[in-house]
Image 1 (cartoon, rainbow, N blue to C red):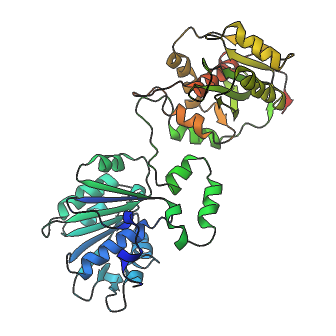
Image 2: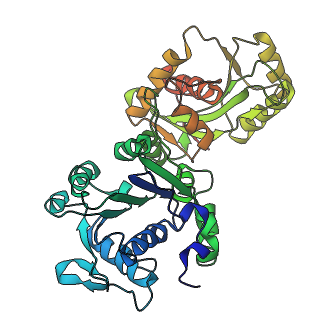
Image 3: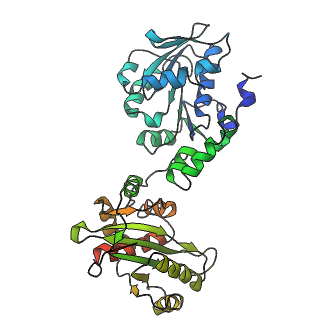
Length: 405
């Protein structure tokens, strides 16, 4: 019973019904995707459905240490009677019934030329250095038997090769998250990673097995925002602003009130800014979001509150003045479209002049969708961000007087 995989496997770990050429197993770290693919290979080889298998990993060491000899590898999951022999010098794994698997590194796609197979398993495909070249040589080699199939197990990354596979009608996709396999992981593993990556793109990709990609046409990319988080600005700022994009309506289904805190230092082309906080809220009454703005103004010792007044006009100033009577309040009016206002800010990111003091998941998700076809809803967080950075860099603000936050 211990080796009877259908008893232990989750539904997502069992081979889909026939009719597919490629089975793409997307999963988070420790979700059981390697074991899933290894069990598929084991079943095909032990039952002589396949006799010539290809095993491909990011490097030859990965094939050997993970796919063959790892804890979920082909030798570990087999019974003593059916355990394949690893012929290291010939780079192959041989089963007692005479079937064998050849080992390949994705770093050397040309090594796949010549051999032919009736099945293949590729592990961590999204980490291959040359995925397109590997598929170009592997696909023609899958020409033995009645129905040669390819299984790919990987943590997803938004690379073109993976997107093409998902769009392929002959490819079946199954997904699993780290938490689905937590009972077979060391104590605290899933919890530790969840706490470490909470709310970030890494959590969605590495734990949930979610493909997080950049829509074509968006003004920002994930790579740009990751770079913005890696940059440091220090804490001697000459200007701190709280920017507000007030919602038009109130209630659970209303737009968010965009509230962004940012600061800047330097002069001219050396001036740089940092996003300190995203305090955006949904469903609040005007007095409630104004209180959030007032708290941010006091906590960050801001110089000014900037608020878009296209919708509320002087009412916005009045609401804010009641919440924080002594704060300088600057009302701004949008005379251009949202994208036109955001494009100069996107350029500042491209010039490495903007930092993010933390990972702001909702803000960054909106930034990476804004401007792409199909984007819907109000870019409330982005609007507030644009007003803040426009004041801090494009408008230059007042003469600097350095102080520490």
